[in-house]
Image (cartoon, rainbow, N blue to C red; front, top):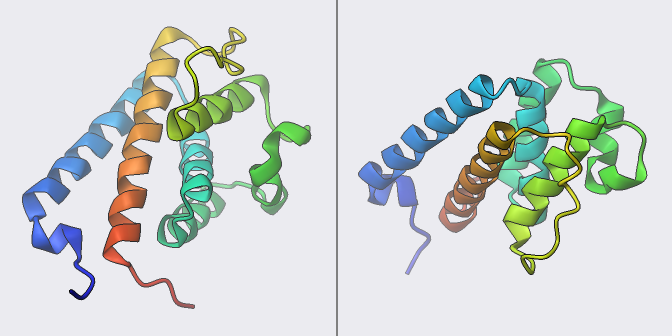
Length: 145
């Protein structure tokens, strides 16, 4: 069978992911988290999942919101750089943990930089971004120059 666009095949399910995404955006804002941090998390999760469509979209969004090319360039190795603040480092580590689903004992991100509300919001952001990556990859969204 040819590739199937999941959103077109089951538009109600797609709309459900859209609604979840909007709810998570609201949770991020209520938790006092910067929209630029959200873009970094979306990019990092998309890097881990290999989603070219979401990488291009959220990299462009991050640049439009003022993110620097240097920080985007080192994002795949964020832990080796001094570009990211304590809360950003904690958010990126948490997003990686949610994406990779390691053994429950790993809690590198849990250094007190994030509130419970922020941990929940970032976890949900990683969950919804993983869903979007899977929709885009499974649907073979085109990514051309």
